[in-house]
Length: 260
Length: 248
Image (cartoon, rainbow over all chains, first blue to last red; front, top):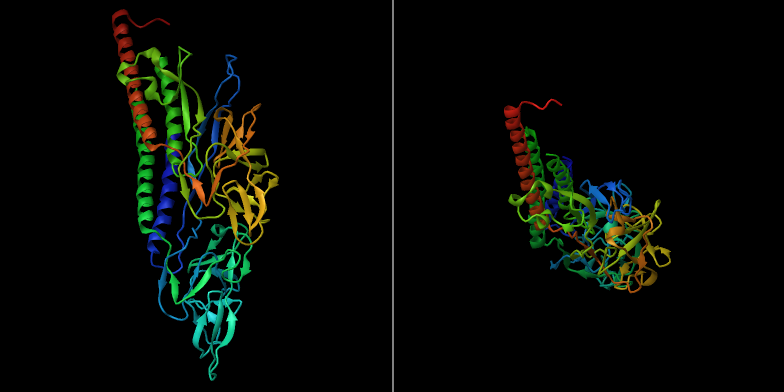
């Protein structure tokens, strides 16, 4: 009874899907979090008869006979639609409204990408993320700056310590990707670029299809709770249907064993 | 006794097809497999889809009614289109399939969850190039967009138009990864007026209710066959007790 194993692959894949859904639900209040989605793929097929092949009686078969062996999950990319913008009023909070990511210097010298805009100033006067990663290209000399303003196009200006005039201090750029779904998630709402995501392009916020910056706002998680709950119910039912196949196959085997 | 046996092997095959369909309820671009039945003795009738259409009720079974599987065919009906917001996800709206290039030649798929490879070429989840009107499609940096007519834009510049080919279900041979190969001698027809939906994927077209009903029916039919076997055995036992065991 191969159907037992076929159903088992289905149950396994649904279980992984539920894990993705639970991670989404656990992150409904995580700033800059992007919901994940499980992508399924079918497995190998056993071709019993090829379509158009001749049968033993010399008749051409109008259709082949192919029997599949189940499903698996191939990838779990994030969905990068906009999260809700929440007003915080904090001058170092910046949300990206539209496409794009902040580029950050990770502690292990890798370059990461994030939409988490709860920024701060480190001891060297550089603009950093909440995790302490420096924003690239770096905006520095921010120690003691007052009246900080971040424009929609990323221009950072303010009054430096000991001065009275507003000065432009730097620019925050955003980075866009041809395929953000291909980015590798490393947690902390941070991603690494790779071949699947394509090369990043550095642009001024608001140009070339990228989003603009909103000072005083944070981007909430884009998890849609109602949608995720529905997906969870669907996954659970799909799991049950697959387990029903296991049960039915088992009953058939049982009936066979009773055969006299 | 042997008719019951042939029916049982048909049911095992059907169970496996049902199991595979149900396992792929959430596989984007997956097309449900339908089994074609025929009565073993009367070769003329071919019924698409389900055992229950062929036999009204398991109680009306007569031994010569047992069915054989003639073959199986993909149900190419449209699956629901689900928005994903991923720029490289694309669903075919209407008939036709994406053409992809594998080391073994061209293949066809409805699964449009595309990504980029190392060279920036549009590929499937398995890494096979997605074919455009002028060959593989390569994207540069910047935003990507796939428009309704299948034109692919990279950073606002057109880099290719997706090729969609129309194929007949009977000519398709399934391969892993929701792709199909053409049967020998069959050909695909290019679709001129391409219609696709970017930022969306086509869900599996498996109808869970139909699959579950078929499974229940298959298991009941199986039980009936066991009963036929059982009564055959009893009849033989009765005959043996009256006439003695047949000598050969």
